[in-house]
Amino acid sequence: WYSGEKINLSRRRIDKLGYFTEVNVETPAVQGATDQVDVNVTVVEKPTGTFLLGAGFGSGSGVLLSGSVTQQNIFGSGKHLSAAINTSNNSTIYSLSYTDPYFTVDGVSQGFDLYLRELDAADAGLGRYETKTAGAAVRLGVPISEIDTINYGLGVEDTRLTTFPDSPLIYRDYVATFGEKNTALLGTIGWARDARDSLIYPTSGSYQKANGEVGLPGGSLKYYKASYQYQRYFPLSRLYTLMLNGEVGYGDGYGGKPLPFFRNFFTGGVTSVRGYRNFTIGPKDSESNPRGGSRKLLGNAEFLFPFPGLESDRSVRMSAFVDAGMVADTYAFGDFRYSTGIAVLWVSPLGPLKISAALPIKDKPDDRTQPFQFTIGGVFQ
Image (cartoon, rainbow, N blue to C red; front, top):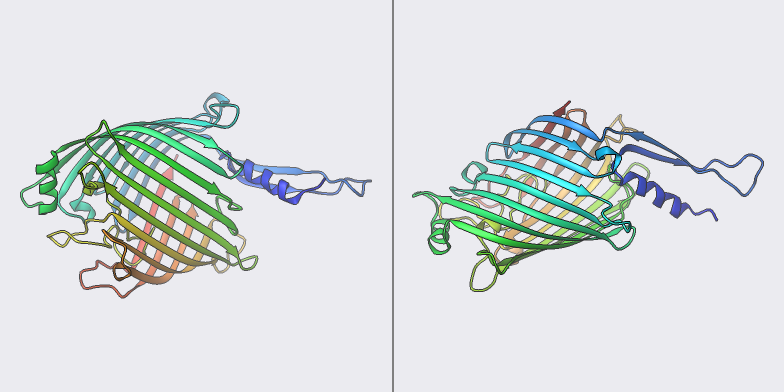
């Protein structure tokens, strides 16, 4: 029997393979038959092997440089391999990842990661300290339905902290108490449900994810963090969509140890509460620099609409938005910061471009506002 729902599900399955930039399904009637249709699928393929060099600029992170070698379909097996370098004026990340999306015939995926992260917090607008983290992890993804996946991970990290005589006392006290070298045996678990109609240009459906992270016994870091996100798209017409997004985070230490300050939640910036500088919303240290917190709440409402004159172009979109968010060590409405404005997202040939013009609402004297923000990342082959 004909089922429009199952046909749409087939289109989403093909789209989520990641091998195509466009997937279209048509169901023309069979000539000479009144109760039969053909199902024709047309796709636009994209390269699965890429060597990319990138350059860009972010209003909160300065010049961005990146390079990567990625093969999403090694020898036609469907396995992914990626090596990448990403740098900005405050951080450098080296990473190597391998994923087998069909490790078992039931669709269980398996992956391995190696990475090295270096952060200069002062250059990121935080207090003066530096971190250098080396880690390795193994992960499994277990699909439990067409739209639900449970992810498991186990990893090892070594983090070295560097403080200075003029570093805020909170960071120097941590190093004096727990040492400059911290090891973590990390256990992670997550659940994701993706019921959006498209990964590239969603207009309806929802996306949810819940994640948990624990510093297990065996490492010197003993803490836990949990987060949840719910995002929903409401089609108002063929051209207009309402998007609502909510996020909550909670973290703490155990075994007589606190949540490490370098594991705190942060918010503010073009991807959370626009109109405020990256990571700057929340408590401040003794030098009036943002330090993050163990609690997080975030909410966004966006009215999405096509760019005027480009109604049929699915690479560019505008929105009018209202953002609200807080980070602190307790949940309190008085810690919320708000903003409203307009934004543009363009998936350009040079990489994704995000621009926002926001008006901060009820900001405090020590807040670091930034009404105009943008980030652009470019690639060339």
